[in-house]
Amino acid sequence: MIRRLSKIHAFILLDELFGTRKQKLLNIICIALSFILSLSIFFTMIAGAEEETIYKEVVVKPGDTLWKISKDNMESHEDIRYYIYKIRQVNNLQTAQITPGQVIKLPK
Image (cartoon, rainbow, N blue to C red; front, top):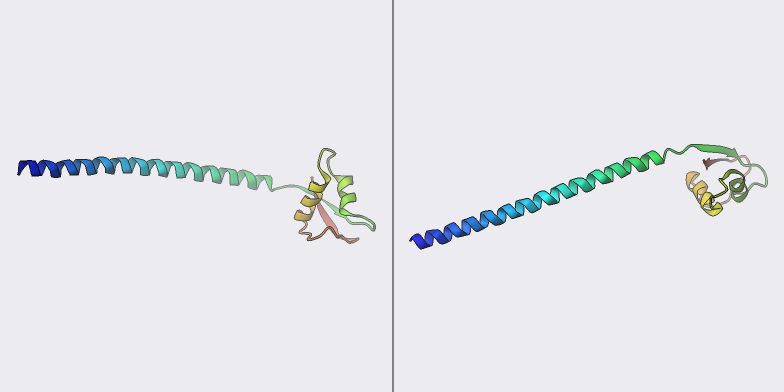
């Protein structure tokens, strides 16, 4: 009877030991997930702040193209193709086709 009780007691102790390890592992996972979530919120806030870009508005004249408008208004170190891409995204242009009188937003 004593031997039987000690085996049961040993199983209970082992279960408590592994339960404690499981709890520690669960705590570590929760802390890691909280840290990752905090970082993602932080970087999302930073990205949101960067999206508040100031735009210059230009009225398209006859004979203007996105290439010409870009060349006249962009920084010299920028890639003109990328600048045109940004103009198209900002103005929701499906193509590079523009018409006289159209108002185009240009990223500064």
